[in-house]
Image: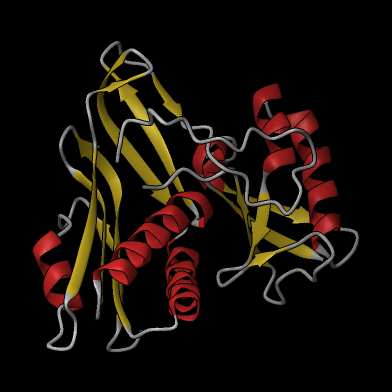
Length: 166
Length: 85
């Protein structure tokens, strides 16, 4: 990790994600643009009443992937950028924060781009798994995106746009 | 090669402690995929075994493709489709 990047996995039993800390980290006297995405657990998915989400993750690879994402964004934008990526681990209730991404750059366009690129990469290419819990006592893992180069059968790559977070 | 495999997400609960020790006849990821497929067919419910086709494999630092060598320390993870955020 450098002075420009901060990556974190927050064990929900120990701490909550902190959006203000993210904004402070990416702020800089030379940066006029700061953007942030906060993903929260909501109470309905596919018409089912959701009571919470458990996030499972492979911590060392998740943090390594966050670093790769930052490197890719820095290369793609070709402008100075500060980036903060933090994700929750464990059982979350409705309204709890699941993910916080923030970006700081000189101008707004790059700040929006960096934040969007980062959250999409976190959602689609980081080893994190979401298990939804429903009010009827049932639970299920979200289908998600395969990390295979070419899945060995027809994988459904599409995230449901109604996953009960973000 | 002896591999200690860690299971995540929808694969959790299929093995005690979410870990599985496998003897793999070869040293690349495709060999591990084949060995796990044989194990899953006889030990896991159909849903779990079917999910393997969409799983990736990784060391603690990188995703490893089928033609790549297994982690030298023998510790690997099997990654179902991801759904963070």
